[in-house]
Image (tube, rainbow, N blue to C red; front, top):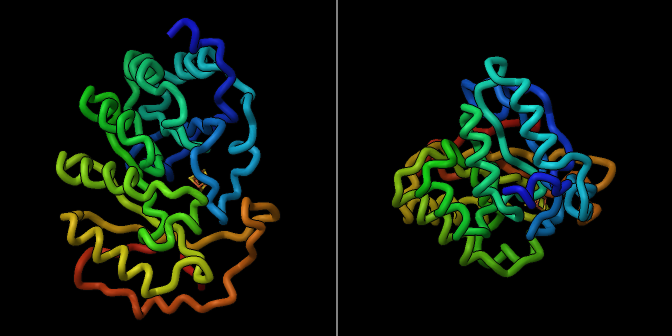
Length: 233
Ligand code: SF4
């Protein structure tokens, strides 16, 4: 841990939110770097920064001061599992906080270790695309690693959610229905969250609002509970 303390791998910290981790008052830690390059990603600065603005020591000092004011820490990014999260989570837990991890699921080994060691309380797992579109959307060909993490969390009956960002030029209703089938076949029985792409001035693929209409009525409803997090209208 001592070598990690002075590493500037935290891009920024959101001091307080009630929105990110349901029923918790949390801060959000935005880690630098990611092992994907999703076309709609608006976190470009975080992805490409080799160095962040805060060290792990800065983070732990911040949390020390928030004891009693916050009850949870959300590890996000970028991709938090690009870093040595094990000692970081141990240190956060020692301070008495619950931990939620936002992840794209590629780092199965680290995710499973964190879960087995009870260092994570909740995971929001991004299901980026069906296997046949995964490489196009994420610019990585590692769907099998995502699937391994998904299967692991389902089999563990871990407290987690699966979510997908919708951009209708990248994922159409057929694709999303395929993803619903995959989740259902693997035994996922929780809510599947769909969130619409929000256009920002810059994103990795320089994409704009979708030209294609995403007809929500064509989404299969009888396999999973589907919830939209931000609607088009
Ligand atoms: S949207 Fe994709 S590229 Fe951006 S941080 Fe998330 S996983 Fe990484």
